[in-house]
Length: 179
Image (cartoon, rainbow, N blue to C red; front, side, top):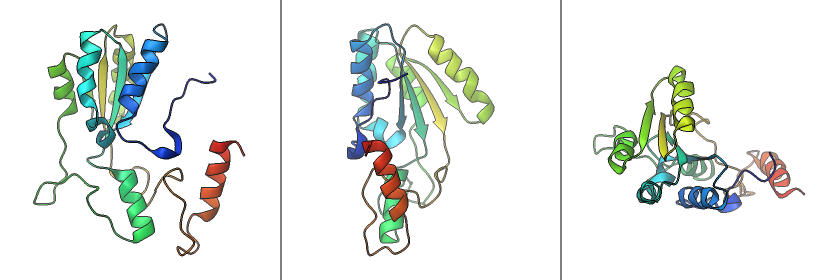
């Protein structure tokens, strides 16, 4: 359906998705709103779950949990050949993540954790059928999009990076900007 997808576009603003979804639901209270957000982005504004509970704003938060800022990591690896500060790890190097399902429950949301593909459909059905705010936490591989996949929307591939992504960047930008 036209004009039903909200995005911060090429700004890739972390912390934008949650309040944008709440605003969309307030603007169109009869429409169902699903906020699809990464765990790093969600942590920027997860306290807004309290607003949803206090005011019964039934937004579905679908949190893709890959224990880090993986699109930032992909850009760092592709452009700089390394990554720094983009993975959430414990001092021994193991991936770290808070339990978003438990956090959501502590805020008063119904929530589901999806560890296996087969669990996703039932979790989404439950979340969409709820009359209040909900959260579905989907455990996602850090390399689900590929280990070196920055979004074309984040930044252009510099000219000094030879043979890597220039055509893909131009194609993606043209589609998004309707050029």
